[in-house]
Image (tube, rainbow, N blue to C red; front, side, top):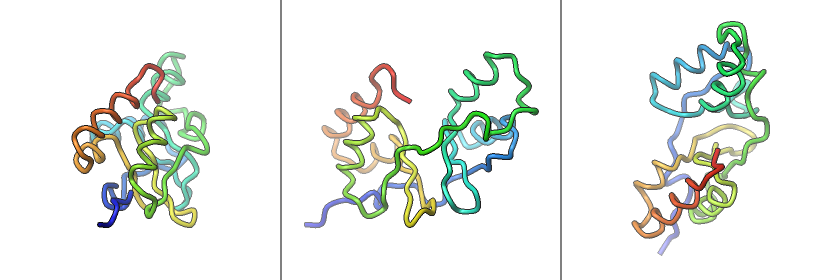
Length: 142
């Protein structure tokens, strides 16, 4: 029996944004796609990730103009990532230990997908999914 890999559960070709885009564009993309984060890319290379929380805490709460602040001013560099061929259970353990709800999937430096909590819930066994969601959702998750 073959074990499930990240590739089996990830979303391919995720919506992305560049660091030079205004955060207002990031917010609009997140709203239209119903997602809470965007991989930040330079070409097809992953350079970071920006979350809805980044936008709220670093822009809105500080009274800054979302049309004047660039994504590069607020995104997180060096996010935790997964490889498309790594076992899904290893990626789940990393998501739980780091308390992140999504992992960009990178192959040879290029963004090839994203693994989100919702993707895993569709693929994993019910018991492991519940445990994983509980671990990821503990206070302090990103």
